[in-house]
Length: 207
Image (cartoon, rainbow, N blue to C red; front, top):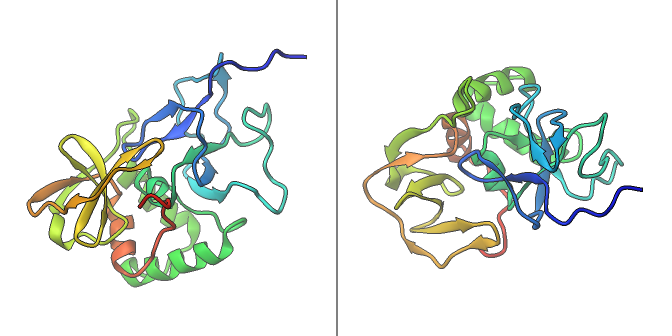
């Protein structure tokens, strides 16, 4: 029998796209394929396919295989759905069919009808470079939809109404006024358009 782990696995995803080690799981899990660990840390790979999805933690249909499976997808964890979207994921059609249908309908309004493979191809080019750097863009903050993540004072902030809330691994800080200038946007541009078209992500209670 293997001894219990004394430190958390590197499987917590930030709005900046980084994957870090933290004991809290957050509200959602998800995956990008099989990502092997070495002594609890990920290797070079951060994805094995372009289908980056956001899944339910409980997986009522029985597809969860534990935190470090040998031959199944590697679970990653998000504070909430807005964080998963900022990192370039989308709702899973298998375990979150209602969320997927709402996301797909809003996506169709923003971009035209697409199947999940075309959606994921467009998302992939808009979320990460070949050397694993997050793709970011600039926009006028006042016109960004709720649920978008921006970089403000060099920290990720979630936009909700007239305020911005700084992200932490445990939740969101107290609200501050929404910036009024051009800002650096962390959420991929196609997803921002989908949020603008009406998709509402599920947010952490601290938001």
